[in-house]
Length: 464
Image (cartoon, rainbow, N blue to C red):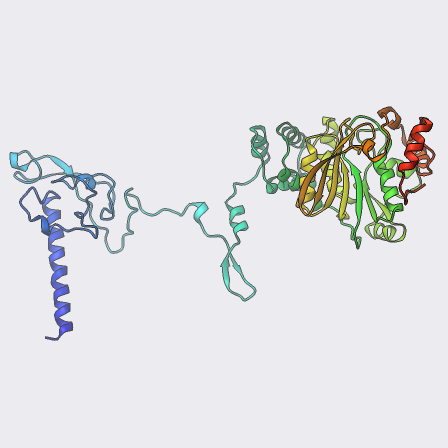
């Protein structure tokens, strides 16, 4: 007999002996040691434990009977009670047969192996563990969906009641949630009641940078974009300070264009004041209804152009009803200055709500825009001249907060009354007077001392 045949014979005898031991254990129950069987011949697993046991005591396999087992226990169905013959089992020495749990049988060749310790077969894999959809790479190979796609597929289906409820409970949404909200609003299939409820809940909770950035992204997806080559700037404010001042940001945009900047001014008609930027520019003779091509040509020829918000964000009409019904500042006041369709390289943004100062700066930093975001300590959404201002400087994706004091720059303090405006005609007249260098905005006469200090602090390049 060759060595190979001898080895096969030993393996065959070993298998037969193992099957005999297993069959004997099934017939006589697990208490082999108490019945005089040789402990060394009880089948053991790879860790030296008796088959089906999990560290129990003598004579019954410990927790291996009727409890959740280890590697050796694969139960099929529920165990049923049987009775031992007299003289067998743990109580057989006293002649008292008792019910014990039947040892689990092995599954047949065509039966699925049960799940360990639970007595149930394999079910469908949970949704969060299912692989993502298959894609084709440029080389034609199949691969699973990206991490973002799989994460998005695992998200529960969004609906208005769930999102509003989460905000009411004080939970922050992510950018994808608020982008979904804005997308549905811009599609026009959301009733005003839901829009108003979401806006009020978000205002009560307090917006986050991610939420505001998602809303801006959702709005820009529906915008009419403008392609203006080169570096461009915008000067804009949120409004809502209730001071009814003249159109300071509009005059500042004209001054910046006169100094050589390429300005794309984004604005609208009055919302919280008597006169908006569109109202005063229209009174000055500026055309409002420009196409994207005309905006680019105007910037190229004269250095400044105006983007009338309703023409470049036509889908915003679907939110007008809810905003007017509320009559209070909402997150839309912050979205407007962040949604210039020309996507300028730099911005100067004034905010009236102190909570919006870091939020607007954070969104601009995320979008790679260089910016100055400011709020006057008197509550104006301007770099005020009545007192100091808080300023967030955004450069290279980082935000640095500073304070600006006009008096330290040689600019005399004024008062809010000197900045009061009126209707479109009044504000247009003030703008012409200021740009000609004729004095204080609203005709308030400065003292000769203030006038001299103001002139000495003026810089070259100012439009007069």
